[in-house]
Length: 185
Image (cartoon, rainbow, N blue to C red; front, side, top):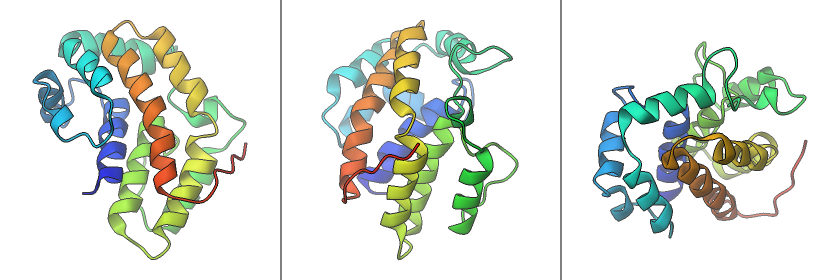
């Protein structure tokens, strides 16, 4: 797994999975022990330290649920709630590139970052173009507003720091893909 895939996968997983999800346990352990910083390719030590200091799974679970879950979450993690957009457009885009989508929504912020990691790991001939399109059409068009709201609404320093870390990482990730950013919305 290269740096691009690592960053997309870690951030995507933290936004997509509940803190009490057993799949997330090893990652939260790395964060709590401040060992993620050893492997993190971006210079974001302050935000990783903030996340480490606030990494209390039970408290994170409460904050995650209030932020992203239920009938009235503080912050919707779905692109279709932020833009006049159809989730089917993202699904078609990913299916056309061979990504198995299953029954879950594909327009969840975390799922979109995980899709970026998946596209990178597949190493198809048009992978970079597909990743650019994913970022330009489906992530960057609403990420700033989403992350601002997560930062403002989070009860824990963990999710505030994650929002800032993500906000800083997205342009760097997009720059790695080359070509000018052309936002569509």
